[in-house]
Length: 249
Image 1 (cartoon, rainbow, N blue to C red):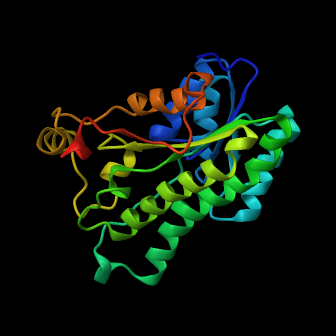
Image 2 (image 1 turned 90 degrees about the horizontal axis):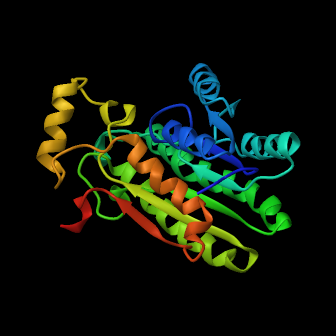
């Protein structure tokens, strides 16, 4: 799956599955723009992969999303792939979720996907096509206790993916979503009353994942790159679960 001459923009690209995807695309020949709120991490990942360029900002700001796409076009003249990986989690049931927490989760996880995708569509249409890969989640389809805002946000991403796939199918723009299960990323450990140890996370994977282990971010990145590639040319509107059987139950 060669991406020589291709330009890829990844939100949330400074850590976890976004950073793993950035490395995989760069290794396949792409120029990668890494969008993240954490400038230091974005610059570090960009430097580490050699073919990366950091863009620092908040995807919940529609103007920033437009500027990020404009930057890709100004530097490289095209945008072939958009990966919407940026996301946050707040761990609480409805009663413990304030207006501010609810709105922030929705702003990053849903608005950010919509704003960035909306900005990417016109140049993709003009150049004759492109690929958008959104990050959904197992919890966008089956739900989970104690993460109501996150579950709602990922459910919205799933249907946004389907709707945009239908809107732009005749423009050569494919829109799919990867739906990860339990992955060993900073988000998995974040927002908990007691920060989990490595052993705690190992036991979590053993207890809740059918195969008995957490995923490595690179295992999700492999599927992201496939969905963005010409090898997935007949796929659009798909929600691809990469969860070791978690959602099969």
